[in-house]
Amino acid sequence: MTRQTSPIGANASLTPLNEANLAQLNSQVSAPQYDRSRLKPRIVHVGVGGFHRSHEAFYTDELLRNDRSSDWGICGVGLREADEKIASVLKRQDYLYTLIIRHPNGTVESRVIGSIVDFLLGCHDPESVIEQMASPDTQIVSLTITEGGYNIDAATGEFNWNHPDAQHDLQNPTTPKLVFGFLTEALKRRRARNLPAFTIQSCDNIQHNGDLTRKTVLGFARKQDPELATWIESNVCFPNAMVDRITPVTTQDDMDYLVQEHQLCDEWPVTCEPFCQWVVEDHFSAGRPAWESVGAQFVPDVGPYEKMKLRLLNAGHSVLGILGSIHGHRTIDGCVGDPLFATYLRQFMDAEVTPVLDEVEGIDLETYKDTLLERFGNPNIKDALSRICLESSSKLPVFLIPTIQDNLARGGRIELATLVIAAWCFYSDKQVDQHGNPLEIIDELKQPLHQAAAATRKDPLSFLEVTEVFGDLIQNERFTKQYVSMVETLYETTDIASIMEDLLQSGNDPN
Image (cartoon, rainbow, N blue to C red; front, side, top):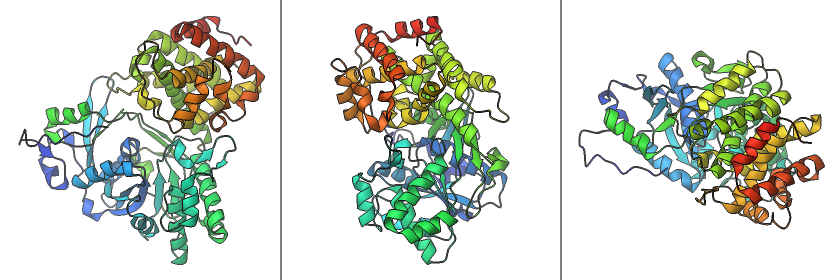
């Protein structure tokens, strides 16, 4: 996001967002009425992006509004130099920000979130972050570090020890760079001080996110201190969770909206849809907020819920993001407004995803899929395809490729998902849409993917040789036959829509 330069000098009637000015806010802006000075940083959250601020921080703010006796506050943490911007903005605003909730009918709700009470930068002062995690006040350390933040090698499924930051953290435990180094050192200090362990709670869009976090933390700790790893294994809880709320990147228009409608100057608000869901396994080490009182759902096993959401919503986003980007669409709602793309997405969900899902108690899948299309089509949530395609090398192995693998195992349909992989090759190679307009590609593996994709003309399977992403998918003859046919057609015609239409008309797996 490009941060807005303060317009206060140009318009003295604007109200800067901070604690002192809460009472002056427009009556249409819902401000926290609870005493924020009472809050303790019982949650340390690593990765304070838009999603955290529209989701966990929102739920916690809602709890504080409904239960004035609650003192659950959040201390945000950034581990990268890129987090300096959000740290400085939140500090200037006393850690307040506006959540702009945009409904499909045009209704807009604006509320100031007050649940974040501090922010620390681990890249500059790792000791402060470690000590905050080790503090007796801290009961939960939660994470939104994105799929790539777990440092897992897709080819092996194991922690990538070759990463230079992982090697650094093993040798320098008190000045870590990766979140696992921070967690391990903080837990080591709590153990030494006879303090109970905190819960480590992933809020990322990863199936079995708690199990994955447990695996990575224990794997790291065993390398560094085997006795500590044994203590962590016995004392730290890692609840699995399914999280859901569409939260596009903040734009200048969002900031301008607050200025124009409410005379409010917020340097980094967050926009989101009204829908919000959080399904969590109720396994916590040292207590938790009563989030269930404000809409969160606690269940014994979150697996079926998260699988449903990742395979339908998140994979659906990637389907539209990659195919739509090549076609020339720019936003998710623009894709869904195109009957071809809406039909393709629904066919993908019905024919390839639904057959491999587990039964989800209390969920009508047909209604859920209908709701997804409505949410994606919200004209007031301009979710850019460039955001959806961010770090696709981390997303597709989690959201889309498992559906292909399941259908290969059961003899199910694969062609709709396979076209997305073929299109991703074209996207990574050409880096422009079919009209020649440049595509914004941000991916840690951008260069390896580009190099592999660029060799497609000589070797149509070259893209699949990026094993960090595709694992052994290249070994499946049925998949490679389908993939090669599609990638050759796409390179020949460069018309993604015609290929989509042909697949929809065929209606049957050509294999």
